[in-house]
Image (cartoon, rainbow, N blue to C red; front, side):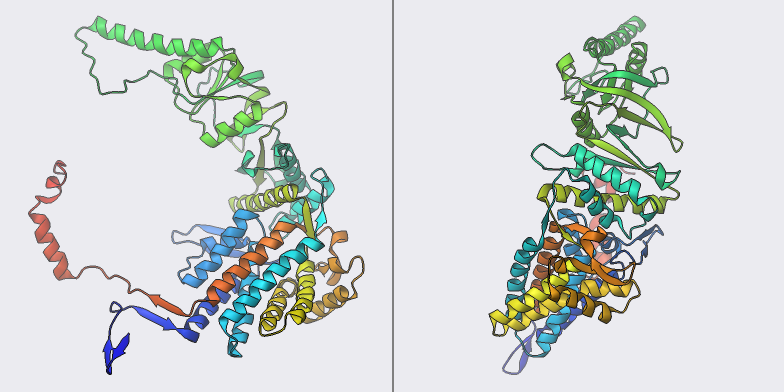
Length: 557
């Protein structure tokens, strides 16, 4: 709304809402802080879980930050930006989602105190950017190198990612599975694509029954009971074409006037399908994975030839099979040739928790592997799946970047001390913002202490003292929540990839700066449905179209 000569001028639609200046900032900061506080209690090994119930009654029990925020039906625009931080962290690293959101919430809380002291938002934003840049440099300094073949350290990284996520019962077993899977799919240049680790969930058995398959598991069954259940020394054909009678590309009619013509037509159709099967047999393949359909007649001929066949295999599974067995995905029946086949020691159909699954094992150098997760209930298996996904991602990041940092709040305390020293060299009002950034980072060890039922002030004082002493291990001192003391996190095996921290700090700073710079929120009015009079008018207009029958030549219903 504006005014001209005392007369108000409406420039927004009726029902629109506008919040300006300090009110807009306070509203946005409050919403962002609310999101951070929602996930804060889940942080760390002693964090609690959340039960999320959706509109149709489905239940998710988790302490995974990004899962909680995705499941929450958040409407406030500033709060949605906090959800985006978690999603970005999850996409980039796979872990540290709660850390990123909690830091962003605390940065905004500290910024609010500065706004109350009349520090301009632009000054705070500038100081935060300077602090975030400096923090990246400090994290690089305190990072430790890790070799991609250092299994012991990679297991510790996986262990840290899984701690507090319901996987404690069989953590030793699961970390071994995760590290083995990542080292097997890692490429020679050090890149790791976790897409090539297939995780299959099966309810039944215990967590201890979880296993890794050096090859692929396909959640399908063979198409014909007469086919062999297991094939040794498998020669595998991956086919992205239908093994069935080919229909014409254009609309065509076949006119049949006598029974013998019909029989000839059927015989020809059968002959064509047999021709396709003969090509498969001639290639030397004894296992067929088909992305499309396999005709009933084709199934019969394949079974007679002793070929193990599976149809309607997912595209993603075909790609993994190609990588595991060395086969090429053939897109045309005419292109089938012996050199396109892959190899596996064994292809077998087995029952897992009462369901048939196909195991492709004994591959020479499988660059795609599968992990079966077992558990007593669906909720347990789902949470284990999330824990393993996080662990797979962090181990792959550690293998790619070859750097890690201590956990347990150690990097945050070190950053906080070093940023305060840096702030003193900057001077001016930006110094206040850098100091606020340094204080905000202490929310991580503070929250770890609170979630473990410890006194956060005593713990923070002890950690600061340990870091200020310095020394060889000073910067690795973090919170040992199990023994309620500050301890060397490297010795305790609490370690995380460097990228978890660098991404969390940069994402949190960027989101906080963006929210701080908003001083005007203009919300459009929610469009109401048409009034009864408008509906009646619309109904009269549609009546002239002869109802639905008159629309687009559709026949009356």
